[in-house]
Image 1 (tube, rainbow, N blue to C red):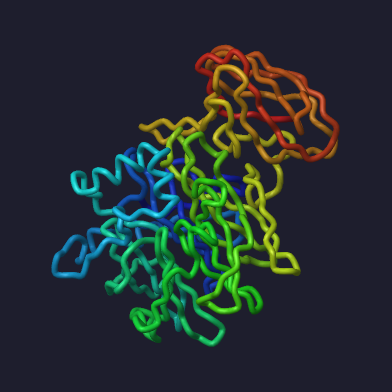
Image 2: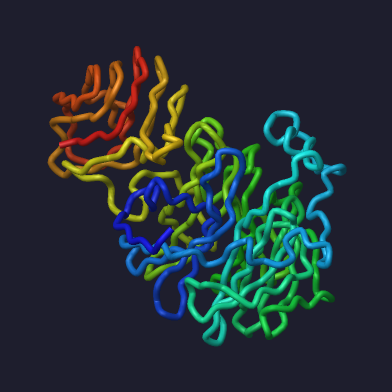
Length: 448
C-alpha cells in the first residue's frame, strides 16, 4: 500500500479497503493526531503482517502511510533462540472464557486446535509514544511475544527492534507528568510495569499483575492509559455487556491502581450480527475529546474499520456512554448529502453490511421482513421533502425519522428510486426498515 490521502468526516473514517482496527490515538509534537492500529483484511483471522499509521490535522483530511513495521523483519518470530511463553493458559480459563467457549463456536474451534493449526505470523494491536524527539512503537505478535521499535518520525518506519520480557497481547504506553513511563499489556489478565529511561527496557521488579480484572472491572483486553487532571483513566475492551464489544474505563489516583470501575464509553455490538470485540482509546484533539474504536462488517467478526465519536469528560470525571453514529466526528448528514449504505451504525433483524471479498466494496444488505438499519444523524433546518435510494434487488423501504414514518420507496432492479417524504426541520435518527426484500442491497440514500 502506497501513501494515500482521504477526505471524510463520517464513520467509518477510512475507505472500505483500508481496515485499521484497535486505534490508539495520540497528538504528537507536530500537532497532528496519529492513530496506531493493527490491519485487517484476511478471511480467516484477525490482523495481518504489517502496520500502517494514520494521521490528520483537522479530523477531516486523513493520511495513511506506507508500512511502518512488518512481522517478517522481527527476528525472534518463532525463533527458539529467543524467550517464548504463552500469554494465556487456555487450560485454565477464566469464568468469562468458559462462557465464551460455550457460546462462540469459532473461539472454541480455535482453542481446541491451537497445536494442530498454529497461528500464522501476524502483528496484533500496537501503541506508540514520543519522547525526546524519537518515537517508540510497542507491538505484539501472534506468538505472544512483545517488543519495541524506534523511529525519528511518528509514521515510521520503525527499526532497532528489541524484545520485551512481556508475553501476551495489546501493549499500551503512558508517560506521566514526572517523566516516568509505564507499560501495560494483557488479555484476560492485565499487567503493568515501569519503563526505564531508554524507553526500551522494562523495570522487571516493578511488574504488577491484575491492575484491572474480569470479575471487578469487566476487563478483557486492549489496555489504554490516559491521565486527565490528577486522575488515571484505564480504558479497555470490556465484557460489561456479556461480550467484549464495549470500551469501558476504570480510574485511579495512581498508575498502578487501585482502580475503580466507572462504566462503558461505547458499545459496538449493533454494528454487525457477529460483532465480537472492540479495542480503542480516548484522546483530546483541539478542544474536543474523542473515542476511537472499530466496527466489523461482512456478517463476520472480521473486517474491522476505524470509527470515531465525540465524547465528554464531565466535571466529576465521568464519561457518559455514547452511541455509535454514522456522522462520526463531523456534523450530521445534511440535505442533499449522500449517505452510503455501509455507513449504517446499527443493523437489526438480518440486515448487515455486505462486503465484496474481491473488490472490498461494501453496501447495506437487507433482511427479508422487518429487518432495519439505523443512521445517526441527519439534519435539515427547513425539513425533508424527498428521498432517493440507489439499490439493486427488490423490496419496500420504509423511511423512519425518529421512529415516525416519513415515507416509503418501492424498489426493483438496479436503479435510483425517488419518493416524496415529509418531515419538519430538525435533527433525526434515520431508520430504513425493509419489507418483502429479495436480494436487496442499498448502495446509498439521499434526503433532500
